Length: 226
Image (cartoon, rainbow, N blue to C red; front, side, top):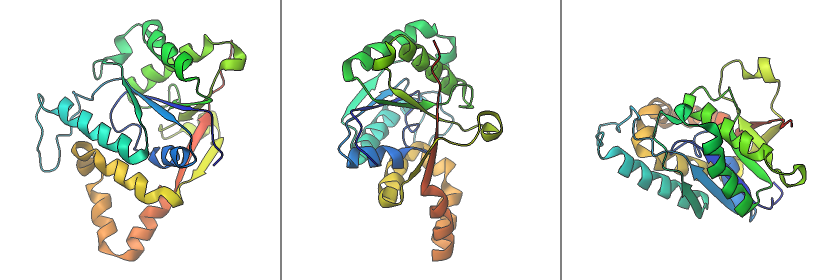
């Protein structure tokens, strides 16, 4: 991976920067590219409380913030910006107002790449709302100053609708870092990936099969039209 001027990550929840993307982020920081993460909320309304449960509704945002900071340290992200939005309500915010916050950071750090969810293909309403605001922010810039938007598409029919991915990253060299960043989000990871961990522990063959799927990450370039 070649070095970029700066990469800006725009995601609504702690763990969004790691689940499915940690390898790419690690490749960027390994190449010497500075990375800034905008995290919209603290995921305080998330349903997962650890497995076994170790969080409650009051403690969850504190725990998830610490997990996010640990994941950032693992990935080499030393610039974390918290927008302070409320979990599961981003879709109800004025997108122009949210875009104001994102635009200010874009103008400050001047990224050449902006990573977010591909609008309308993020599944979660917060994913789609924050990515929509990011696109609005990018469109406000002069064309020559706009970062390229790398979108993650997680809808099951994304390839049928928007085609094959434009960007494919082989993250084999940073797979251990990717897994460490994912596991840093303990409150969410152990509920979401416990079966995967059990399968990986069964045999070297099972681990190899699962890791083969984790070694590649995909992105679609979102076209920003005036």
